[in-house]
Image (cartoon, rainbow, N blue to C red; front, side, top):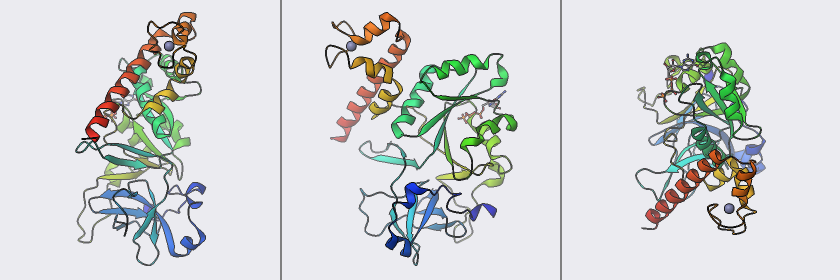
Amino acid sequence: MKSTEETLEELGWNAFFSEQVSPDEALLCHPVRVMAVHRGKIAVAGLGPQRFITPYIPGALPTDDHPTVGDWVLVDGATVQPVRVLQRMNLFKRRSPADPRRDQMIAANVDTVFIVASCNQDFSVARLERYLVLTREVGVDPVVVLTKSDLTDTPETFAAAARAIEPGLLVQTVNGRDPADVAGLAAWCGPGKTVAFLGSSGVGKSTLVNSLRGSDSIATQAVRAHDSTGRHTTTVREMHRLDHGGWLLDLPGMRELQLSDAATGIAEVFDDFALAAQDCKFSDCSHGVEPGCAVRAAIEAGTLTSERFARWRRLEAEETANSAKLTKRRSR
Ligand SMILES: Nc1nc2c(ncn2[C@@H]2O[C@H](COP(=O)(O)OP(=O)(O)OP(=O)(O)O)[C@@H](O)[C@H]2O)c(=O)[nH]1
Ligand SMILES: [Zn+2]
């Protein structure tokens, strides 16, 4: 199949990764990208046709990095066994539903997250902010994609509301069903680029993905890697090829939007409030009735809005409660 012989660059290889490989290692090892994670094996690309190898790294501790989808892994040139996982640009993970003391890796090395919402009554700034917090926490660049622009006369009103969340936030309105319109997202989906989608059910993620995958749609792509018996194997997580040369990474399990361990993300998305709070008289100011509260003063002066204040407080309260709950469960 044509999609199995990409160059390393087409797979996303760049200086961030190559700088991690010593000259000695380069003689003995070869970098490959993890395209899919199955039970007990991973599909890798970058060394001839895509193939399955073992995910187990000889001598690695349970706490060491283990390969997840999107990872770059050095494999031994002779045995094709993994030697080590290269440091990641970023990692999506969540608390394991089975054991909250452990993290479950979802996907690594994403260049852009498309935060998808639709131009209709489901549009919610609060929800966009939550996805932004998550994206900022992981350290990936977001692009807000507002779908169903064909169903409203005023897509710009929705776009303006989204842009108001953060100075410089990239916002695109599209008719997800129209491939020509979706081509406006091509800049983030070119060769070597990896994108992921976040957004609530029904906003049009699958529609967008299908338009971006063009000829290589879900029906035609499927998983072409077979195991040794020739049977089709069930894929747990995989990268999908996009028409413009890039890659799509699924983020299953990142949609519940339970915020925990997200303090950094919240402070980034609400940096206007975090900044104002630094001038409060008390360092533990609750921005309620305390004297010398700079946040309330800014709201009264009209430089910050009370609506955004309420959303910020809600996210902070949720994050504090969830993180405390998890810490308690972890310490059991
Ligand atoms: N008119 C119009 N309809 C759209 C657009 N994008 C999606 N739809 C429709 O909206 C419905 C939901 O779209 P999906 O792509 O299934 O939504 P999703 O986000 O993948 O939903 P989940 O799979 O539940 O997460 C479908 O009927 C689509 O045809 C758009 O830009 N314009
Ligand atoms: Zn205050």
